[in-house]
Length: 168
Image (cartoon, rainbow, N blue to C red; front, side, top):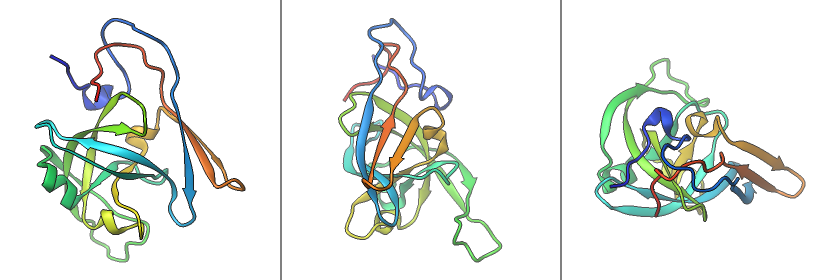
């Protein structure tokens, strides 16, 4: 049986070493939101959905759209307080932490993450089906290079070092 890595091991793999390679994903910079890339969210029960994720270097935690989290029946294991830069209220809402696995672009690996459930994230980027936002709990071990004049980016993922990660 394949296992998902724990939250703390989301970017580390255990088991037999099968190959060592670096995967880089290229994409375009949205003029208002920055880097966006194709993702597939996987729920533990086997449900999946496709969409886009915004790479948000200003976010501590990754997030999932509330409607998507509920549609996929993503498990929750706690809650977190959150705020956005544009918040004008002094109170910070509490939101459930959901757990899901994400497939990024054409990378064969699934990355298990804790995702903060955020309302209306899906509608945050007009004209795009944004289902998730990737924050520092994912990006902290990646290399993100942006080319402003070309309006492109490259996200280099950690090397694949073991066989115990889950595949699509």
